[in-house]
Length: 150
Image 1 (cartoon, rainbow, N blue to C red):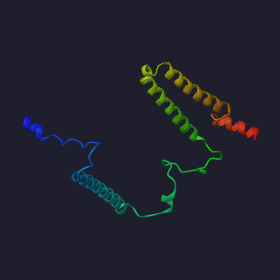
Image 2 (image 1 turned 45 degrees about the horizontal axis):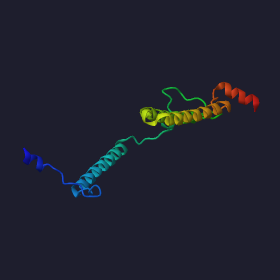
Image 3 (image 1 turned 30 degrees about the vertical axis):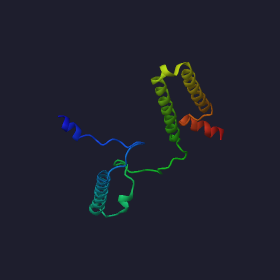
Image 4 (image 1 turned 90 degrees about the horizontal axis):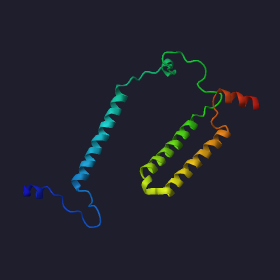
């Protein structure tokens, strides 16, 4: 049994860090990348070669789940869906910071508690400011108000 253990040992790492990858490891990586690129290229070529090549005005029309499209696709006023995305990112990052604080709360003590409270208060004040400035109003009632005032 000891002979088997010594036969499977890896050579010690050189002083100062890891050794560079061996030629066999680089060859394996290159072979894998080459095969992956070949398969991707083959699939793209087959999709292009076997795909339909006919064009017609009917095929160029937008498809609305079997319903004939009516009117323009563009709205008169922009819908600020980007605000929802920004809110999601801000509150997602806030949640990450709060969860990471909760994991290490016993190590951070009262100083960490004060810092996370300050963080939450700053974000809450930003939310209140955005609310008061009308950044959260994008429904039909906000459009009616903007038409009356403009």
